[in-house]
Length: 436
Image 1: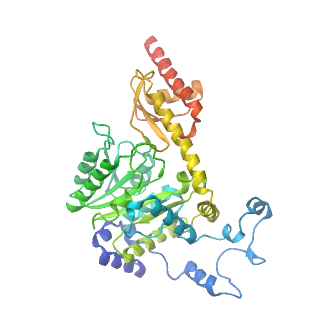
Image 2: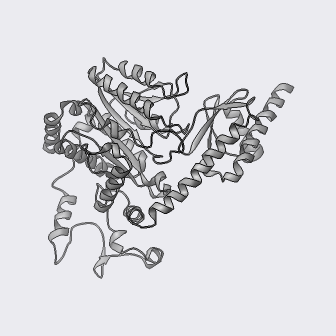
């Protein structure tokens, strides 16, 4: 094992042996090179005032070489802020700005010890980093039965972990904390579990309320007290899009110091929060008991980044930083929030009209981009194909009964027509089935 990896492992073992034990084999082996091209280039950038012949970019007239046809479209920004490589951990000013935003929007974090957000290539990359660091073959990854399909690729296919499902909703149509608890305690013989909490949920658009949040935290704490090391990943992709009575903070704040056997990891980003999907700017942030522990985890994270993408794109980091620092940012974001809330509320009022009750019910939703219909009479895939082929309407079929509808991308005035077409398609399929 590389001495740097061994040193990081010793730090984790000393600061919190449970966190050390959570690491995968790759997580134990990975490190960020202290003596290599990046570190030597960083040193040269600070000291080489005459000539800097270290890093693989081209310089012309004292600034990064660039094509005029590109710079003409980006003339607001200095070449040094878009063409150079960003550091593996991300643009420092952006990391600082995102941390400030995170603390303002999640007051429950308070004075709890958290690391500095590390920039990822959006949230999928952040989840992939967590999978690399903590998931080994056979490790349990606990997610509800209503989930984003990419979890399977990220944890099960790439890392060989075992997906463990529990029902998202209980009989009261609230978050099923009992199911989460049972799934956790089923891992007692393994002594380790990875829990992914995705609120607002994709695909259902559900976020738990305050009491449900306490139940989730209690289930995780009880598992830790029973001797299970729990890595909790809060996938906060749709953070901030809370439209009704629900938690308005990430559970990361509650979980940050809940137990030494619990490692809370926040994965979030500008992707959906700031409506910049193609920019691919996300963040991964750790909570921990000491600065040394957080530093070791961040060094290993940087090692994963260095070994995979080297660093994230610099231009989009600069664009997001510019937005966060703009005086108009808050107002413009609130305007978009109100549009999204209007679409969610209109969707709910249409569904609650009663006119579609013979065709479907729907899963509770109060946040995010999506909602899910629970079909009563037709197959979800058959309906999806019929809608697409006969009416030019795109939806997502999930299993035999669930149809996901992204109200986020439908103008409020078009939502009623959308659901009328879905209902019409159900009836058309029923008619064909009855005639056979």
